[in-house]
Length: 383
Image 1 (cartoon, one colour):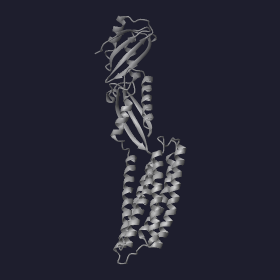
Image 2 (cartoon, rainbow, N blue to C red):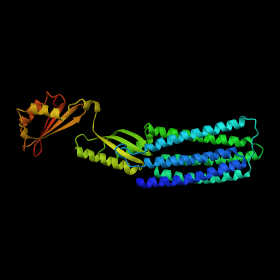
Image 3 (cartoon, helix red, strand yellow):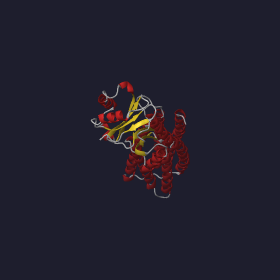
Image 4 (tube, rainbow, N blue to C red):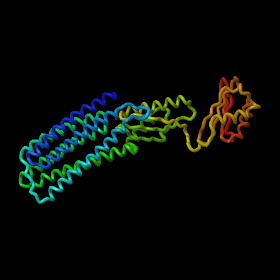
């Protein structure tokens, strides 16, 4: 789904939930005041807080679905994670207020009010309404793979669960246990606090670049290994951003293939992964020769230095015009040299002298000489 369509769908489902929260919040506050139910009043505050969080979701979703730009080359998905953490903290604040008010009511000597039947009606309507919006929002969140919409869906579920607790509390109070109405409010607060903790923990894992599960990593590695030309997956690094996975994969290929062929293998590996796993947003493939050791190869001189040493050793044996190309292969802790000559054949004695001349150059371990027609000489180790 294009980014603009995803953003519109997220906005649509959030607007529906927001107006429902506003309507239910007002109805609960009015019903709680009329019926004398403290649990229903606190539940009304909860619904209105849902509406506030819906507005927050709208603002964050507007930015999180924007295309990558110069300042945010990996996109704006982390806005969702930050927004989810803020929502989790909001849940904690609401839970603390509910618990504090409930404690004050239970600790006072003032008799508790017994809620009347209108409170039951409003609570029942809230249960069905919020459960419906939960399923609607969650379906959209799964479709868009949006952590923020999932958070908002669970916020709606807390309202449905809290309304069930309110129903029980009001009914229990009417049966001669007025304290049950206050206990119901405390139960609501604990549910909100628990979900707030879960939302914060999940999003903080994303913000600190926690890797995807090992089982998921193994599935990705198997997909990469299935590509012809990939000898080994030597490393895989992963992180998440806005519900999408970002990958860096290090693969080993035959050390003597061309750069373009190695690139082609890497592109095939990238495409296999993105085709199979739809929630992977970006894949960077690093191509290494096999065998390969980063610490050893980094100690070796680069092409300019090695070619200068080689040609200086050959200055009395081979004129520069006779050299068509020099290819270097960095393998392990040494360099193998492929020499391509303009001549149609190579004198074996010349080949031996060229090989002997390279022995003082320590990084060079092997020399292969090719003519315009075919390979005429392959020397063994220069050591």
